[in-house]
Amino acid sequence: MAICRALLKHGYSNFSLTILEYCEVYELLTKEKYYLKLLKPEYNIAKKPGAPMSGRNHSEASRAKISASMTGFGKGIQKSDEHKAKISASMNAYQASNPNCIKIEVTDIELNTKTTYNSIHEAARALNINHCVISAYFRRNQIKPYKKRYVFTITKIDS
Image 1 (cartoon, rainbow, N blue to C red):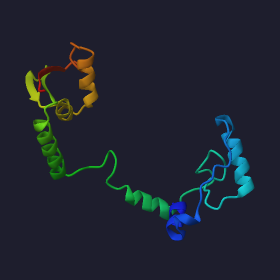
Image 2: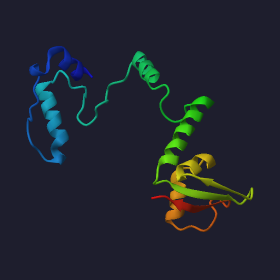
Image 3: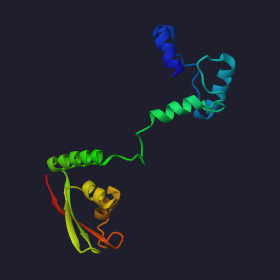
Image 4: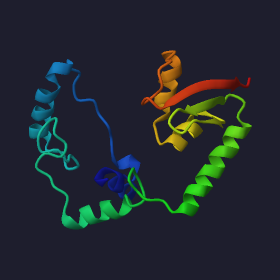
């Protein structure tokens, strides 16, 4: 970020990028150490070659800002029921209009029910499993029920 701010403040024409030396991969860290010591670059964050964060810690204020900026991202974030319903409706509309979706039938041996889904992803969401599990089931031509409970069958492929 320091370089970006400096570029914006002073203008691109006040900076240059120069290749100092070509070397073999195994020499990179040695050469980097040499040039860091020789040139003492103002904008280099790394204290040691090959370790960009070595010797540098984020302040508590920076950590708080990073944490606040990441709020709402990633796994484990609880979504409201309304938000989940909107996502579900959007996915169902996409799957209904997508001619490449594979319709599958899921037989639940435990409950003795059969349910048809418009796609592997839809079935995986409903069963709370990863879609790759169902794809692998078909790829491996499995016959045995998944978790001794579910049998997956392709019912229709639109093309």
